[in-house]
Length: 410
Image (cartoon, rainbow, N blue to C red; front, side, top):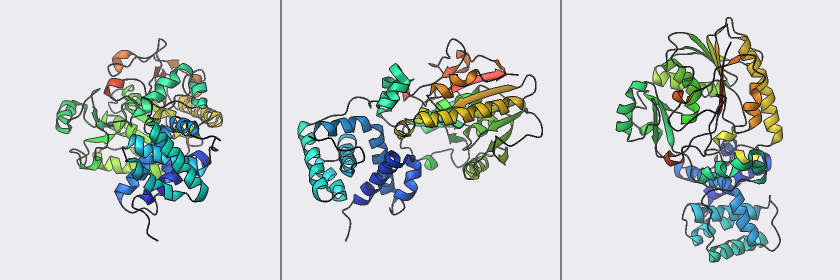
């Protein structure tokens, strides 16, 4: 039996949604199995996009569904997920209602099919609309408090594409050639959906992809002038490239050989150099100390929710606690590898207080406050000199990921 055109992509999206919500997988992890049977980049991209938009608007989609059912569907009901698929296609991708039904309803049989058709038809007749921005779920609302609405509301659209330049002096040149917008020296922002490997400068290694917020920790170390720096937990390597381009002699350490392979490829493409070590930072010992250490620690990554909206529905107190415990251990080890006068920059792409400000009291070093003069226009540290970025910041130019960054000297 031949599938309805477009049905395999919807079936894959459904599998990805279930993997996230039922098994706690990331969308990226779920892709490996869900997309295995799909041929063609267009269908694979469509499956990813549908699944991501369901994650982005999950609370609002479920509120619509619940408003049209007499008896509430269970959270794990297949019919609920299929209705989510239909609503996303109609409300986010402008798919005609009849096409949304034709490409999703075959995923169900019997009574659930009739139920899904009835709920979707009811909502279609009501001409329902999504709010201006997504609504936070109860768990996120509890953790983030009054900031939750603005942070999650900023996820209304997927983020633009940010690239980091190898040579900051060429910012004006590449901004003009790529037709982008620069928010800081060495940074260019382009519209999302831009095919990366087709852009000028990619093959010659003039730049790499890196969110604006993710470039800030390495910027705060300044120029290296040949001094030694350890990029701890380095993969996939954007900060290693920044440090090498800024004149540091870089040692990049990470536990994942697979992820370090991405760094090796980018080093080769850009012509930059770094010593790469595959090891566990909790057991590895350096032969000698470093002038500076950049610890971009493993974290819950809730600050990347613009591009990974599934993180809002996977992360809870247990994962936050586990990551905070690991970060404390890594900070203690990093501090011990610095000589007097050495600098430590700590960063996490997390919006959870336990992983940010909650860590600073355990660092046995002297804080070096971050200043507004070191940051792109529109960003300021708090009164104590810690920097927290947020998806709701810089809304007029496309926003940014959420990070916490602190800096110390020994």
